[in-house]
Image (cartoon, rainbow, N blue to C red; front, side, top):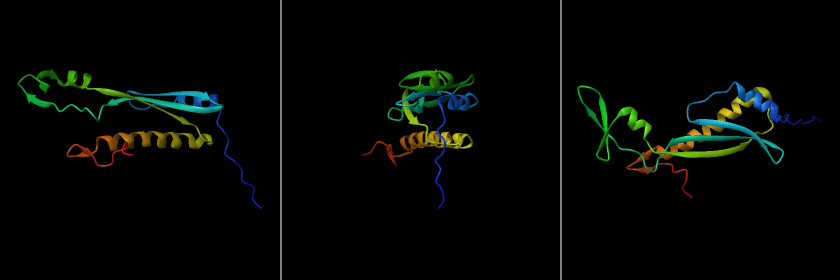
Length: 135
C-alpha cells in the first residue's frame, strides 16, 4: 500500500521570498498576507473599463496624431492617460505547493484574471460573446 503524502504548505516567509523576484505588467500589484491561518495573495489591477470604452477618432495633422473624443481633441498620450479605468481586487489562497510549482500556479491565477478581461472586451455588435458576468 502506497502512502499518499500531501504537498507542503508554503509559509508566509517563503511566499514573500518567492514574490521578491517576481514582476508583472504595470498597473498590477500583488500583496501577500495571512488570513484565517492561510497565506493569501491579493491581486489588484487598474484596467480600462469595458462598459464605457472610449471610441476616439484619430485625426492626422502635419504635426502629430491627435484624438477626438466627446468633441475634445487631445494628444494620443493624453487620451491614454484619461481613459476610464476600474480597480479590480481579487484574493486567492495559496494552495499546498512545492517551491518549484509556485510560479506555474501564480501564472494560472493571472491567466484566469486576463481571460476574464478578454471575455469582457471580446464583443460582437457591442455584446460580449462570452460575458463573464452573465448569470
